[in-house]
Length: 213
Image (cartoon, rainbow, N blue to C red):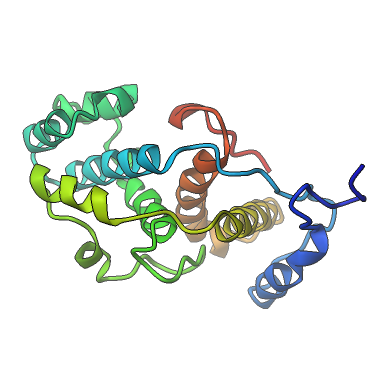
């Protein structure tokens, strides 16, 4: 049997020292009682690429790319099976979920990091201004070529980032509960970046990912 706080990969809560150190610098509290996050990646590399492309396409449509263009891309890439109800509605011209789907740019940021397109993923910084330069153009052939050239980071890197997202999200929610209104600007960014990372290590589909803290 594994020791207290350890996983089958040998990580423990003690490995969070640097995470809590950085959060304390932002005036946030730590929680030594949070369970260690040790789940392995359960989504295949191909699923991750497909989900990122859907998230990316949906984000661009939510910011003004014509819905018809987004729908054509999804059809051409044969990604209709990845669409969730609100995503399908947006690509059909609906506007009910636009404000929520604007945040998919943050999930795209996390996926771009996981696929080694970007070097850094911070839960308190804005997405880099040049992020679009690291992503494929909105073209079926280019996106298909892109899929053949990218690959996932190591499982150890992703597990560590999932844990960082988990701790950061807890700290933000804790601060909000204690009246730290200044921290609210970070909640959406952290939530949607964490959503992408959690999807990698959970068996659930996109809309059913557990984001509890």
